[in-house]
Amino acid sequence: MTTIPKDHPRYAALLLRDRLAAAMREGVLAPEGLIAQGRGEAFDYLLGEKTTESAARAERVAAAMLLSARRPVISVNGNTAALCAHQIAALQEASGAAVEVNLFHRTEERMEKITALLRANGVDVLTGESERLIPLAHDRALCLRDGIGVADLVLVPLEDGDRCEALRAMGKDVIAIDLNPLSRTARTATLAVVDEVTRAVPAITGHCRVLSAGEARQIASSVDNTPFLKEALAAMMRHLEVINDALE
Image 1 (tube, rainbow, N blue to C red):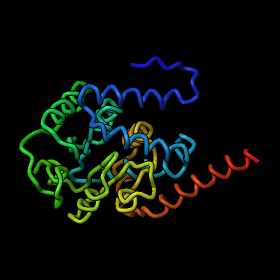
Image 2 (cartoon, helix red, strand yellow; image 1 turned 90 degrees about the vertical axis):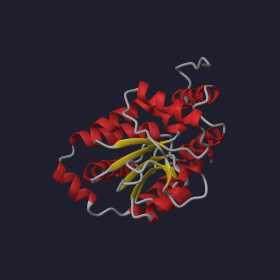
Image 3 (cartoon, rainbow, N blue to C red; image 1 turned 45 degrees about the horizontal axis):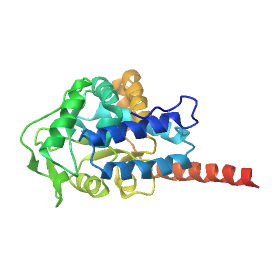
Protein backbone atom coordinates (compact mmCIF):
# COMPACT_ATOMS: atom_id res chain seq x y z
CA MET A 1 0.00 0.00 0.00
CA THR A 2 1.03 3.61 -0.60
CA THR A 3 2.70 5.36 2.32
CA ILE A 4 0.41 8.19 3.36
CA PRO A 5 1.84 10.72 5.84
CA LYS A 6 -0.29 10.83 8.97
CA ASP A 7 -0.22 14.63 9.00
CA HIS A 8 -1.94 14.78 5.61
CA PRO A 9 -5.21 16.73 6.07
CA ARG A 10 -7.17 13.97 4.32
CA TYR A 11 -5.27 11.05 5.85
CA ALA A 12 -8.36 9.02 6.78
CA ALA A 13 -10.02 9.40 3.37
CA LEU A 14 -6.81 8.55 1.50
CA LEU A 15 -6.32 5.50 3.69
CA LEU A 16 -9.77 4.23 2.71
CA ARG A 17 -9.05 4.95 -0.95
CA ASP A 18 -5.81 2.97 -0.70
CA ARG A 19 -7.65 0.07 0.96
CA LEU A 20 -10.17 -0.05 -1.87
CA ALA A 21 -7.45 0.01 -4.53
CA ALA A 22 -5.76 -2.93 -2.81
CA ALA A 23 -9.09 -4.77 -2.61
CA MET A 24 -9.57 -4.29 -6.34
CA ARG A 25 -6.13 -5.74 -7.06
CA GLU A 26 -7.01 -8.72 -4.85
CA GLY A 27 -10.27 -9.35 -6.71
CA VAL A 28 -12.56 -8.42 -3.81
CA LEU A 29 -13.72 -5.16 -5.38
CA ALA A 30 -14.96 -4.63 -8.93
CA PRO A 31 -13.27 -1.70 -10.74
CA GLU A 32 -16.65 0.04 -10.85
CA GLY A 33 -16.53 0.15 -7.05
CA LEU A 34 -13.77 2.75 -7.24
CA ILE A 35 -16.06 5.02 -9.26
CA ALA A 36 -18.75 4.64 -6.61
CA GLN A 37 -16.24 5.55 -3.90
CA GLY A 38 -15.21 8.70 -5.76
CA ARG A 39 -18.81 9.79 -6.11
CA GLY A 40 -19.37 9.27 -2.38
CA GLU A 41 -16.25 11.26 -1.50
CA ALA A 42 -17.58 14.21 -3.51
CA PHE A 43 -20.73 14.32 -1.39
CA ASP A 44 -18.69 13.85 1.78
CA TYR A 45 -16.78 17.04 0.87
CA LEU A 46 -20.14 18.83 0.92
CA LEU A 47 -20.74 17.54 4.46
CA GLY A 48 -17.30 18.70 5.59
CA GLU A 49 -16.23 15.03 5.90
CA LYS A 50 -17.97 14.67 9.24
CA THR A 51 -21.12 13.18 10.71
CA THR A 52 -23.84 15.81 10.80
CA GLU A 53 -26.32 16.20 13.62
CA SER A 54 -29.14 14.79 11.49
CA ALA A 55 -27.02 11.79 10.43
CA ALA A 56 -26.25 11.08 14.08
CA ARG A 57 -29.98 11.03 14.82
CA ALA A 58 -30.62 8.77 11.81
CA GLU A 59 -27.98 6.35 13.10
CA ARG A 60 -29.89 6.02 16.38
CA VAL A 61 -33.11 5.37 14.47
CA ALA A 62 -31.32 2.78 12.32
CA ALA A 63 -30.20 0.95 15.45
CA ALA A 64 -33.74 0.99 16.81
CA MET A 65 -35.09 -0.43 13.55
CA LEU A 66 -32.51 -3.23 13.54
CA LEU A 67 -33.28 -4.17 17.14
CA SER A 68 -37.04 -4.10 16.53
CA ALA A 69 -37.03 -6.13 13.31
CA ARG A 70 -38.02 -9.80 13.38
CA ARG A 71 -35.50 -10.90 10.73
CA PRO A 72 -32.98 -8.14 10.02
CA VAL A 73 -30.31 -8.78 7.38
CA ILE A 74 -27.18 -6.75 6.60
CA SER A 75 -26.51 -6.89 2.86
CA VAL A 76 -22.79 -6.54 2.08
CA ASN A 77 -21.16 -5.70 -1.25
CA GLY A 78 -17.48 -5.46 -2.20
CA ASN A 79 -17.00 -1.84 -1.12
CA THR A 80 -18.55 -2.45 2.29
CA ALA A 81 -16.49 -5.59 2.87
CA ALA A 82 -13.26 -3.86 1.84
CA LEU A 83 -13.91 -0.76 3.93
CA CYS A 84 -15.37 -2.08 7.17
CA ALA A 85 -15.51 -5.87 7.48
CA HIS A 86 -14.54 -5.75 11.16
CA GLN A 87 -17.15 -3.07 11.83
CA ILE A 88 -19.83 -5.25 10.21
CA ALA A 89 -18.83 -8.03 12.61
CA ALA A 90 -19.36 -5.70 15.56
CA LEU A 91 -22.72 -4.53 14.21
CA GLN A 92 -23.85 -8.11 13.67
CA GLU A 93 -22.95 -8.99 17.25
CA ALA A 94 -24.72 -5.94 18.65
CA SER A 95 -27.87 -6.16 16.52
CA GLY A 96 -28.32 -9.92 16.04
CA ALA A 97 -28.76 -9.39 12.29
CA ALA A 98 -27.81 -11.98 9.69
CA VAL A 99 -25.24 -11.01 7.04
CA GLU A 100 -25.54 -11.89 3.36
CA VAL A 101 -23.23 -11.02 0.45
CA ASN A 102 -25.02 -9.48 -2.53
CA LEU A 103 -23.25 -8.14 -5.63
CA PHE A 104 -24.14 -6.28 -8.81
CA HIS A 105 -20.94 -7.35 -10.61
CA ARG A 106 -21.28 -10.92 -9.38
CA THR A 107 -18.89 -13.79 -9.97
CA GLU A 108 -18.54 -16.88 -7.82
CA GLU A 109 -14.87 -16.00 -7.26
CA ARG A 110 -15.77 -12.59 -5.85
CA MET A 111 -18.56 -14.06 -3.73
CA GLU A 112 -16.06 -16.50 -2.21
CA LYS A 113 -13.37 -13.86 -1.65
CA ILE A 114 -15.75 -11.43 0.03
CA THR A 115 -17.22 -14.19 2.19
CA ALA A 116 -13.70 -15.24 3.23
CA LEU A 117 -12.75 -11.64 4.05
CA LEU A 118 -15.84 -11.16 6.19
CA ARG A 119 -15.31 -14.44 8.03
CA ALA A 120 -11.66 -13.58 8.66
CA ASN A 121 -12.94 -10.46 10.43
CA GLY A 122 -15.42 -12.37 12.60
CA VAL A 123 -18.61 -12.09 10.54
CA ASP A 124 -21.01 -15.04 10.49
CA VAL A 125 -21.97 -15.02 6.79
CA LEU A 126 -25.03 -16.78 5.41
CA THR A 127 -24.25 -19.06 2.47
CA GLY A 128 -26.23 -21.45 0.31
CA GLU A 129 -27.98 -21.69 -3.02
CA SER A 130 -29.03 -18.25 -4.21
CA GLU A 131 -32.37 -17.82 -5.97
CA ARG A 132 -33.78 -15.04 -8.16
CA LEU A 133 -36.25 -13.79 -5.57
CA ILE A 134 -36.01 -10.02 -6.11
CA PRO A 135 -37.81 -8.70 -9.23
CA LEU A 136 -34.74 -7.38 -11.08
CA ALA A 137 -33.06 -8.29 -14.37
CA HIS A 138 -29.50 -8.25 -13.03
CA ASP A 139 -27.66 -10.43 -10.52
CA ARG A 140 -28.64 -8.40 -7.47
CA ALA A 141 -31.95 -10.24 -7.86
CA LEU A 142 -30.15 -13.30 -6.52
CA CYS A 143 -30.40 -13.82 -2.77
CA LEU A 144 -30.80 -16.52 -0.16
CA ARG A 145 -34.34 -17.60 0.65
CA ASP A 146 -33.51 -17.80 4.38
CA GLY A 147 -31.63 -14.47 4.28
CA ILE A 148 -32.80 -11.43 2.33
CA GLY A 149 -35.65 -13.56 0.99
CA VAL A 150 -37.40 -13.69 4.37
CA ALA A 151 -36.00 -10.49 5.89
CA ASP A 152 -38.45 -7.88 7.09
CA LEU A 153 -35.65 -5.30 7.23
CA VAL A 154 -32.50 -5.01 5.12
CA LEU A 155 -29.58 -2.72 5.96
CA VAL A 156 -27.93 -1.87 2.66
CA PRO A 157 -24.72 0.15 2.87
CA LEU A 158 -23.75 1.53 -0.55
CA GLU A 159 -26.82 0.32 -2.41
CA ASP A 160 -28.20 0.35 -5.96
CA GLY A 161 -31.37 2.38 -6.27
CA ASP A 162 -33.29 -0.17 -8.30
CA ARG A 163 -32.74 -2.94 -5.74
CA CYS A 164 -33.76 -0.59 -2.94
CA GLU A 165 -36.99 0.12 -4.83
CA ALA A 166 -37.54 -3.60 -5.44
CA LEU A 167 -37.00 -4.49 -1.77
CA ARG A 168 -39.46 -1.81 -0.71
CA ALA A 169 -42.00 -3.07 -3.26
CA MET A 170 -41.64 -6.52 -1.66
CA GLY A 171 -42.81 -5.01 1.64
CA LYS A 172 -39.39 -4.89 3.31
CA ASP A 173 -38.07 -1.96 5.29
CA VAL A 174 -34.72 -0.70 4.01
CA ILE A 175 -32.03 1.24 5.86
CA ALA A 176 -29.61 2.79 3.37
CA ILE A 177 -26.22 4.27 4.18
CA ASP A 178 -25.71 6.74 1.34
CA LEU A 179 -23.73 9.98 1.19
CA ASN A 180 -25.93 11.26 -1.64
CA PRO A 181 -29.32 12.48 -0.33
CA LEU A 182 -30.43 13.03 -3.94
CA SER A 183 -30.01 9.40 -4.94
CA ARG A 184 -32.92 7.11 -5.69
CA THR A 185 -31.65 4.84 -2.93
CA ALA A 186 -31.78 7.57 -0.28
CA ARG A 187 -35.19 8.79 -1.43
CA THR A 188 -36.70 5.29 -1.69
CA ALA A 189 -35.36 3.83 1.56
CA THR A 190 -37.43 3.64 4.72
CA LEU A 191 -34.51 5.45 6.35
CA ALA A 192 -31.43 6.98 4.76
CA VAL A 193 -28.33 7.54 6.87
CA VAL A 194 -26.45 10.27 4.98
CA ASP A 195 -22.99 9.54 6.29
CA GLU A 196 -19.77 7.80 5.27
CA VAL A 197 -20.04 4.07 5.90
CA THR A 198 -17.01 3.72 8.21
CA ARG A 199 -18.46 6.47 10.41
CA ALA A 200 -22.06 5.27 10.21
CA VAL A 201 -21.65 1.57 10.97
CA PRO A 202 -19.80 2.00 14.31
CA ALA A 203 -22.29 4.69 15.34
CA ILE A 204 -25.24 2.38 14.66
CA THR A 205 -23.44 -0.38 16.55
CA GLY A 206 -22.95 1.87 19.56
CA HIS A 207 -26.66 2.68 19.71
CA CYS A 208 -27.57 -1.02 19.36
CA ARG A 209 -25.55 -1.70 22.48
CA VAL A 210 -27.32 0.83 24.69
CA LEU A 211 -30.92 1.03 23.45
CA SER A 212 -33.43 -0.98 25.46
CA ALA A 213 -36.00 -3.10 23.66
CA GLY A 214 -38.75 -0.70 24.70
CA GLU A 215 -36.86 2.36 23.51
CA ALA A 216 -36.06 0.68 20.20
CA ARG A 217 -39.69 -0.26 19.55
CA GLN A 218 -40.89 3.24 20.35
CA ILE A 219 -38.34 4.90 18.06
CA ALA A 220 -38.90 2.42 15.23
CA SER A 221 -42.68 2.69 15.38
CA SER A 222 -42.70 5.98 13.49
CA VAL A 223 -39.92 6.60 10.96
CA ASP A 224 -40.08 9.52 8.53
CA ASN A 225 -37.20 9.66 6.06
CA THR A 226 -38.03 13.05 4.53
CA PRO A 227 -36.72 15.28 7.36
CA PHE A 228 -33.38 13.46 7.34
CA LEU A 229 -32.99 14.04 3.59
CA LYS A 230 -33.95 17.71 3.90
CA GLU A 231 -31.58 18.24 6.82
CA ALA A 232 -28.72 16.58 4.93
CA LEU A 233 -29.25 18.91 1.98
CA ALA A 234 -29.46 21.89 4.32
CA ALA A 235 -26.19 20.89 5.98
CA MET A 236 -24.50 20.68 2.59
CA MET A 237 -25.80 24.12 1.60
CA ARG A 238 -24.60 25.62 4.87
CA HIS A 239 -21.14 24.14 4.33
CA LEU A 240 -21.03 25.56 0.80
CA GLU A 241 -22.00 29.00 2.16
CA VAL A 242 -19.14 28.86 4.66
CA ILE A 243 -16.69 28.01 1.88
CA ASN A 244 -18.14 30.71 -0.36
CA ASP A 245 -17.88 33.33 2.40
CA ALA A 246 -14.25 32.37 2.99
CA LEU A 247 -13.48 33.10 -0.67
CA GLU A 248 -14.82 36.65 -0.49
